[in-house]
Amino acid sequence: MFIRKNPSVLIFLAVLAVFTLTVTLMSEAYGSGAVPTSMVKTLGKTLCLALAALAMDLVWGYAGILSLGHMAFFALGGYMIGQWLMYARTGEIVAATLANAPIPPTSTEIRDGIAGQIFGVVGSADLPLTWSFAGNLPVQLLLVLAVPGLFAFLFGWLAFRSRVNGVYLSILTQAMTLALALWLYQNDSGFRGNNGLSGLQNIPGLAHVPQSDLSVWFLWASALALALAYLLAAWLVSGKFGSVIRAIRDDESRVRFLGYSVEGYKLTVFTLTAMICAIAGAFYYPQAGIINPAELAPIASIYLAVWVAIGGRGRLYGAVIGAVVVSLLSSWFTGGRAPDLNLGLYTVKWVDWWQVLLGLAFVCVTLFAPRGLSSIIDAVKGFRVPNRRGRDLGPDLGALREKEAEA
Image 1 (tube, rainbow, N blue to C red):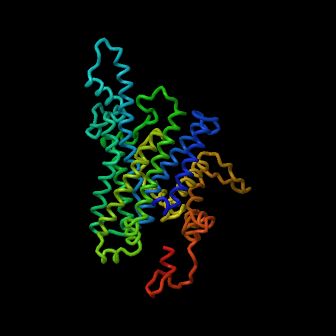
Image 2: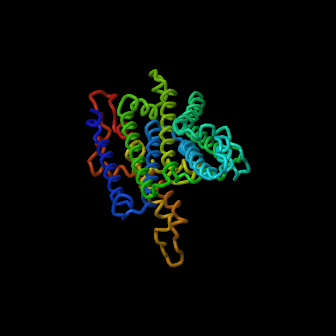
């Protein structure tokens, strides 16, 4: 019934499945090798960014909350899984080194060796309290959701109960992200300061598996996470919950007057999308191999909003399209693959001009194509909103009009 009412969901899942299968059959591990391992990793990371954009569209496009701090939750998810990856992998190395000792090492000696290996770079030999569960994978997986979710819940509860809205809320979320990044930059934060967590591409227990295989496995996992999140988001926005958050976006005071708990709905969306971003980060950074506080820079969350705007705010598939298109173009332009443009008196180097191009694209979309790239799909499929020239959509004078229908 749900799929029948939302055929775009089935189309999206089919396209995602075909894409994943195609990349797999063209990979070095399971196919012809036409797609190198580095590109498979790039595509896997792109799917993770699309998952984060999906969350951003849910909180901004549907609930009207312009959060400029959601990439903080993305990074927190990466830090939580990164702790286990680095701890377990270092533990394997330390255990192998101490295995040659005349006396077998104790668990305490192994733990001290791990702490020295990880935190020696910041002048410490002790394992911080924040790493208490780093050797326990189930607990760290739980923390991937719990830490960003609790952080988002506390921030949202304080902000929404004070009825902070609009640009003021956006500034607060950006300040939250900056404060968290500045704290992580400190060596005594417990997360290795500016060095961050590295070597995350080395999965514990899978040292014998080549990166070509691991890259495909992470591609599958990222695609599955995106598919499940898309199903969840589509189900939420197609029901009463979706109707209420869209109403809050359009007229918050009126919804509150009707008796709905506006703060409760906003807090739910904010916390849920933070957890989705955390999941995306937990899949992204093992493919990236490293995470540091620079990942929490406020500009990263602004990029996330730009992706959603370019793709089409208020449309789930639009957010995914925007993230995929912009992130792949960014990799192409900034990776030196795009040839320089010689204008005679000046040579345009796209590595330097990519951000300018992205800014111009954002301005043009905002002014001339508010529905973003997703409007192309509307034109192809004939989903355009009918132009009723202001006439009522119902028999009474209070019926929905064209302006509301386009919102």
